[in-house]
Image 1: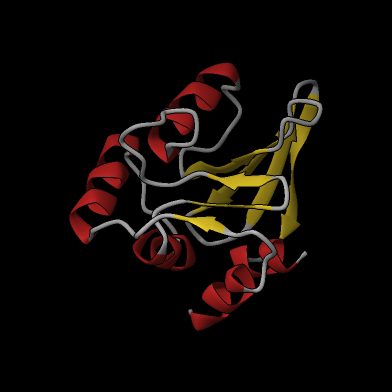
Image 2: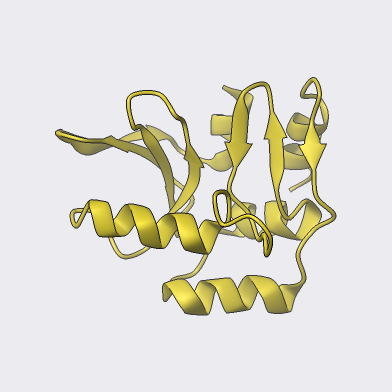
Length: 130
């Protein structure tokens, strides 16, 4: 998992939180009725939330529902009923309403209005390395 930390720490102007507790992560999973991938759980434990180079990753955030994984996932799933149950939002791109999702198995997908969900990466590491 240090590879995700290494790739994020290499980002210019990385803004990061202090990490989320196991209890907070488990509570988020329970609210969404799913399990986060091991990579996303490690990201949450390490940072809680992160932003860099125009990207704002979702995380565990009490004060800003705009980037809280629970709030964003619930909102986006309400907009698109075709999203599988084990998907959660890792990023809203603010480009053509593209949403980046991760499945519990770690694979990364994108969705946008009027198009099918498509796989774009095999892991969070691959997505961040991009």
